[in-house]
Image (cartoon, rainbow over all chains, first blue to last red; front, side):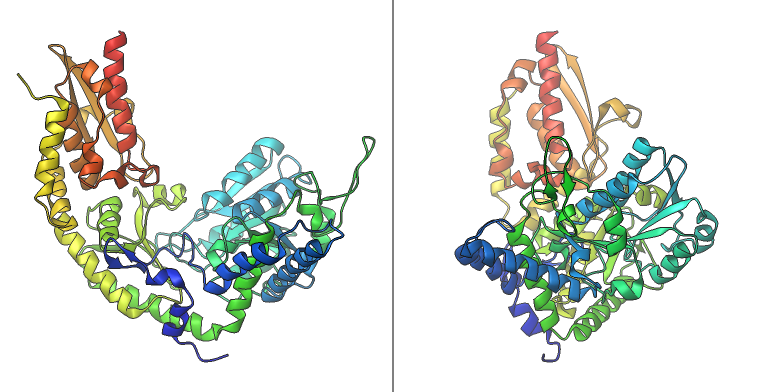
Length: 406
Length: 140
């Protein structure tokens, strides 16, 4: 492992050499999805070239190969997040699918009046599955308010948390505000009242070291594509005893032990939660993404990202009429902002013309937009392959856009 | 006699041919967008609103002497600029011509990206609304 060098890292990501609208691409939309290193791209290609077969059922050579690679990927993910057992790692379609799995399965064990606690800064995918559960089961959804600076109202959290709380489902890092939530403290307190905790790590797995045993979360959900892996694959981590005690989410192939018309019995972990032929190439390539991360000086990469985030905020403060949406003391390298009365769509369109990819809109957090009374924001979200030079060019392009629109 | 839809489209294509780069093009669109609101504030009602994910568009229409007259507005300037081009092409035409029109100028002046569903800026919805307003007149 060599010391972190951003130019060497950039060479691993072929797409960063692309031009957009005649300009070198500056990709600041990592919160939406990350780019892929060639190690991941090549792994998908080599899987389909040499190993493609269905898993867990063939007696032939290729099926063995594919099954081994698939299960090896599970072990790789388990090691990366420090799960105690690899069966605690379930392959899903992504964060949304992982949360829906928990919402359904734990939902089957809940009674009317039981409470689910989320926060005001959740992504829609950590709101809607719980609302659907509440409609099905008569459970009650409680929401931890967000302060004007974009942090959780911890006093309100203490009041909302009670013996009735069965599950706290909380975002680790806000995709809109960049706020890093004090999840260790929240998890401890939730456990004190007997509640389980689901951590939405969609925006933290790529920015922070994640150790599920240290965090002591009961579930953890994230998407592969935001952590340098492919789309359509994600992870649900759950503590073994807990997953064992829950009913399966979907029924079908792979998740069964015995099927008869009289009675069907279910497979053990992890397959109990993996009905149907899984996204085999996706899982294997996600394993490759984590192998790639493990091959890096990750501490150096995260430090570089932190430096970028600080530099971005400092440069952006120079712009008159800038307004940051989210000014928490602890943030990652994601920054949402507005400039004067300018519409985010106009700014995003003009930045795109200058080769810069940002996200504009409500970022799937409409309740948060409502709280701040804004239609949306412009969001720049960085990854460790971004550079301070790109930030400088971004600021120049932004100033040019502001000039055109004013 | 007033100009036909295609004559106006060709005019716009010719105007845009003068621009050398995206910046000049967008400066022009932004200037169009900055002009006074194209629709009165009291007409910005929910039933005239076309929901886009990012920018909102309001459209109103009325029949004047066998011609359909459109007014519209948006909260984003670039969207508004493109709207003013669409209005220039389709407003003051007969419902029949509006319904059968093919809006080829958008692609020719390099703005087709704004009609992609991912932009979600309400323009696709707006064009559908303009045409369906025309259709309503034909079938009523």
